[in-house]
Image (cartoon, rainbow, N blue to C red; front, side, top):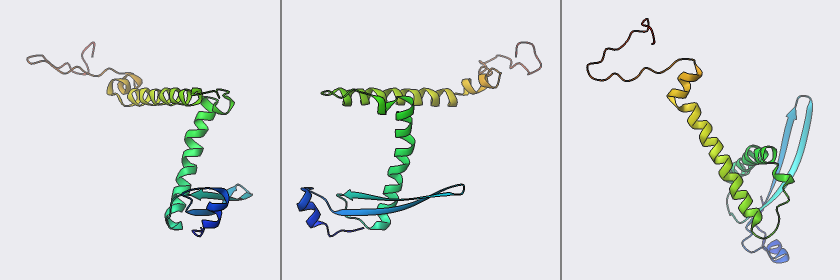
Length: 140
């Protein structure tokens, strides 16, 4: 990490530039080893020990959320590029994604849904004075 970047800030007209970060990553898949060096610029003035996890978190989002947006919504193939359309379209996609996630969460966590998936009905809460049927009784 380099914090002495005044020359770069002036040369490229990057107001607020505070640091340049170099990250060397190693990825092992079976016998294959991939090495990659990435550079980042940031307006944050933090220690490398703090920025390292931030970079890792960024890639966790990139690899999970953005991958889903690309695969499910074909985001990279979208040709919506004029005026406010890109921002509007992105908002609609995020809303759709959140609605799907919430619907799935409700379906998975609702007790009725869980009992239906397991092939049984939940017993009704007995009213005062009502007998509770035993599991052996018909219609339970």
